[in-house]
Length: 132
Image (cartoon, rainbow, N blue to C red; front, side):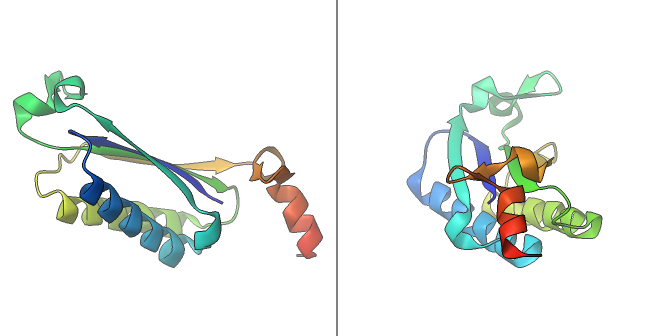
């Protein structure tokens, strides 16, 4: 866990993808205490003329943006950890993409442990087997 979906504005760029994925993984491990071997990430690009903020396209605004959804098991992170993750992630993306629009979103999705998992097992099952 977790599963991360990142949307980036612009044309596909392998170097940018790698930088973003590496930074997101580092922050996810350091702040949310998630293990790298079970972090799954997908990246999709959306053309700047197809991404609108306040009725204007990013192409018109001359800006970039991102949207990140991260599914984590409910009750495994505090409000403070999630706030720090959101803050540091936005700052990192602003550093990577100097023209980043402020209206770039991070959505931490708290998924119930009994309704979320990988490898055919729920996180609730894993929790119970760990004896925690």
